[in-house]
Amino acid sequence: MKKIYKFLLNTLPRPLLIRLSYIFKIFAPLLYKGSNVECPVCERKFSKFLSYGSSVAHRDNVLCPYDFTLERHRLMWLYLKNESNFFSAEKLDVLHIAPEQCFHSKFKAQKNLNYVTGDLVSPLADLHFDLHQIPLEDNRFDVVFCNHVMEHVDDPNQCMKELFRVMRPGGWAIMQVPQDMSRETTYEDRSIIDPAEREKHFWQKDHLRLFGKDYPNWLEKVGFTIEIFDVQKNFDKQVVDRFCLMKDELLYIAYKN
Image 1 (tube, rainbow, N blue to C red):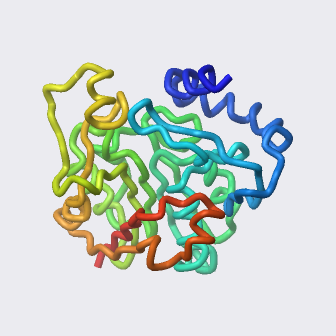
Image 2 (cartoon, helix red, strand yellow; image 1 turned 90 degrees about the horizontal axis):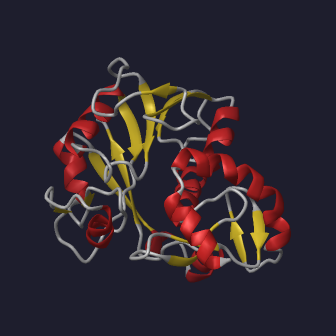
Image 3 (cartoon, one colour; image 1 turned 180 degrees about the horizontal axis):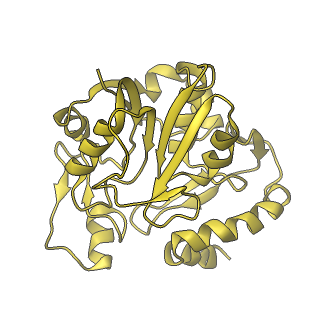
């Protein structure tokens, strides 16, 4: 069963996985009944989370079986809830690129958000476009989310410039990426085109690069000011274990001054 799950996870296209997940979540609470771990997004408890990731970056006990949050999603939710005005501000114009399934319906239902979603192919997106050239006006959004996208695009610098452009001064963004903290600089090799080799080098077959410790520099280069939210400094071990967070993860909040 584990092998079938892993095969489907790493083989089926993302739009199809999204559709199939709605069926799986009906049975998940029964299959994983328990209280060892908790998802702060769906507010459900389970005996354990599912495993997730490619063969070179597979992790156990990380994927919520109900709303499919990973460590990064749960961290972002906790930050939004405890450290930001995302839920309390009177009104926010929000652009969400590659909207995550676990957030989409919740953000869509928030009365204080003017919520716009965009993606190249996702069935969850309101608008379909290439991130290298966003068909939206300058200085429009207060908040931008664009998570685990920059490792896929041809020119991340251009995509970051576009996101900076559509943000209002005073706005902020969360743009998470897979990050190898053992690397000082981002690893990129355009000669690697074989999917199996890309998975070996960049952790996933459709990744074009692997960001290193220099990722904040990429954001600063296009004009953002960065604030770091450190899991180890903000959560004790009990919280990290309960929500299955990545204990050494850094969340970069990018501001447009």
